[in-house]
Length: 472
Image (tube, rainbow, N blue to C red; front, top):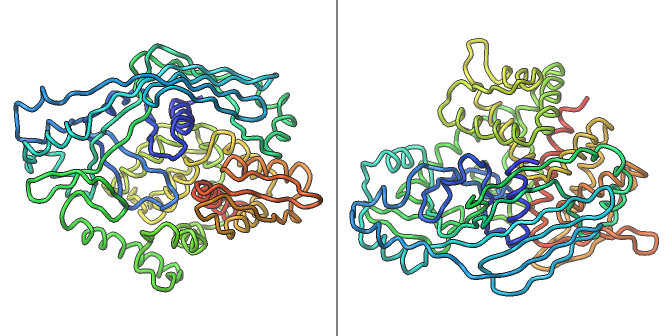
């Protein structure tokens, strides 16, 4: 089990609404404490969960006031107790106050694993944060500020974090919510590939997750957005700069013969509900370069991606390095130790060794979707590629997404004529892990989509679409 998969799972349990951001690297976890500064990119797909990257600086480092550090009071929280049990279904029992938690996950039978961790919330109050910012001015000559503005990076300040109270061990565990197909798949596979037990040791005081507030910088004055979205920017004029980036992508789309959606002025849209209705158009644009690959290159890329999704740490590493390479228009240097992955990376450069930015962006788009999936989903996806059923799965997932998830749970019929037997069980398990529950009502299959499942299912669709283009 990777550190990121463990923290991501815990963040989802503690905060189903998705405001908690999982820390993805145990080495960097100390950079995500309250009052640390992190940056984000403004051009991620709408369905991708927010990712924030360390800067190595704290808020006090970019403010001109020298005596404010003593006022940066980070407070500890009081207690809560959360108990989860996994035994084919996932149930919760929550009591106490909501700031500190003891989380326990237990399983049964040969598929079961146990996980127990005690955590607390550490935070800086809104009043303290507001006071700190009011008393200081931004040092516009600071390298972080200059480069963040140059590279169009939004800056955020961490306001609270989840900290481990005592050293603990995370074991790989099952997550199910009573799904018909997930349970069937677990029973079918329990004596198969899941025999290996993986674990990771989490040290005391380690930061597992955090929440942020976006900074607003006008001139040399700073503020904090109480409410932010993809339209809000840290720096003045950043939105205009972003337009130039969008223009280059639109030009690439035109070269590939891809038309924009009517009334759409950029590669990706700002309003989530509009984007979800135009997901088909987005994936055509996002995968334009895959459509132009030769059969030989598609085979190399397919082999490379299959190697990557079997190693979640490598998956995250490659995404990060690709983002940096595209930013700097630089060589991509990846030490993976896997020939198939090196073959994929090598083909992202032309004969002169220059990064082919448009192709790298397409690969990054694919990796972003894969990184949104649970570890079990990646296993199921690899098996689906081997079974050559990803095209049928793509059609099924798209038909589910065509239903309006809205703001409330909604039931809808599911047509699975193209998938039967073990293939349907495998596909259903993968879909249920995205938050859609399926059950049989008389002779029909009915799905129930939670509002938050739309983004998770969209990421699955993007991953299936990519593999369907690469598979022979």
